Image (cartoon, rainbow, N blue to C red; front, side, top):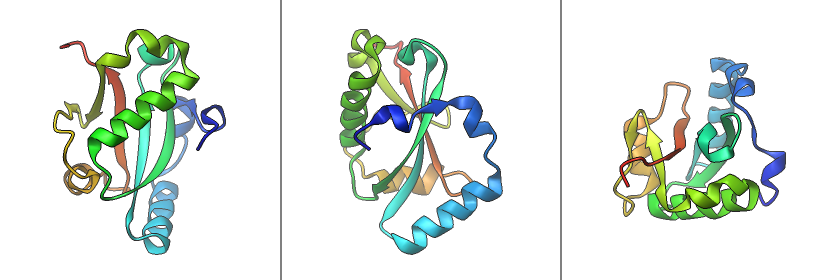
Length: 130
């Protein structure tokens, strides 16, 4: 996970992965690592300075949303020079809702918002309200 350039892909590649493929990967992960949650992180084009991007993460269910946000912010700063101007206004968005409570475990969000394929889709976006 240290070399973000090897795992970040254009959003068009995510659209080519079938529901069945994503569901199968979810089942294998949850069977082999029951305390971990599958996440697909999408990055808004404004932040990358180009096209919309995405990558997968598997995180322990007890990680707080605020820790995930801080980790993603630092990780993206190393990859995208464009993020420096937006780093203080980064928002995590799930199902078109900005997550504003950062002291909740990731599992709470996952239980409410995971898709039918078993993945939780989180978008890293610019928070225009700040």
